[in-house]
Length: 247
Image (cartoon, rainbow, N blue to C red; front, side, top):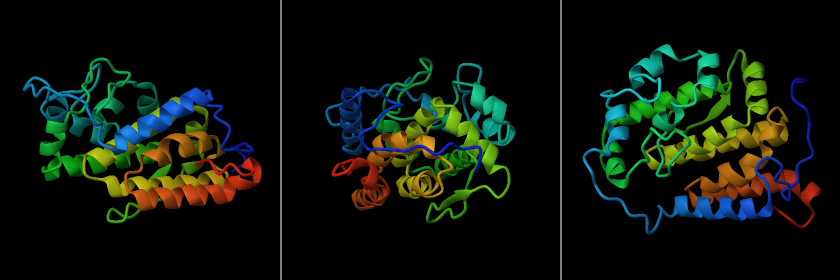
């Protein structure tokens, strides 16, 4: 674990994401997500079903992408490709917001209604999640509970890559949101629990602290699970943050 510098984290700090104004925006974004994007209007258009078609293995992701089955089989373990390709994550993990890939389509409510009924979609989403967990040095050890642990081999190098490549923090926010949209919401909290262990107890992912506290935990949809995570983080940060418990 010598690869990972120890940092002093305070809930008041937002060194990665910027000012207090940015934090207010993050809080509002998380609440809007948890509330199901109230007031967001969508006109059902047969042409705007790109996410559904991609998950049905009917179209390739763009730009310079592939069919989902090809990605899930041939891209697995190709860490350079997964790191450097900047267009596939928005397709594997669609959310109801426009991402940084202008060719991808935001997930729509009517797509969600149909996709969550399709066992093939759930299977591919779970495999997509496994793909990215492996990329981050982690493993889904229980598909029922969502428990995540470090990979048995090679996790140190993957943790180091995650710690020094901040754009992956944004990817993780998207992945957690997508799990909550497409039928795997019960995976959100266990992944965050893993980050709490590795960030505050082991220190191996100390650089994730800001994103974990301000961006990942707040989008966990299960209120009780989210509150439990907040309380657990407070145990580790109260000494640095005084009366400020990060809430």
